[in-house]
Length: 83
Image (cartoon, rainbow, N blue to C red; front, side, top):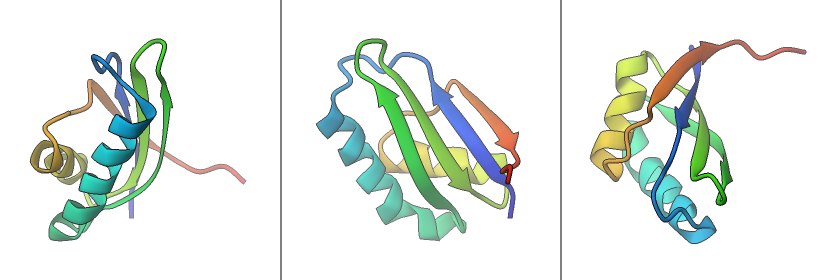
């Protein structure tokens, strides 16, 4: 299944708790779209968030964020895992 990295450039008021809660909402929603959110990284000082996701399509990955919490990524890029 394709692997995507999505990037949120500036989430206003980002905190560790808020991003953990948003990720938990993604996990509750992902099965409806055949998606698996794997990991996330964030920087509170800039409001940047990066999410790694396996999804059948870019649109499916976006749909999970939209339904789960409404924080749709600014960018999403298909990536390949190196060894």
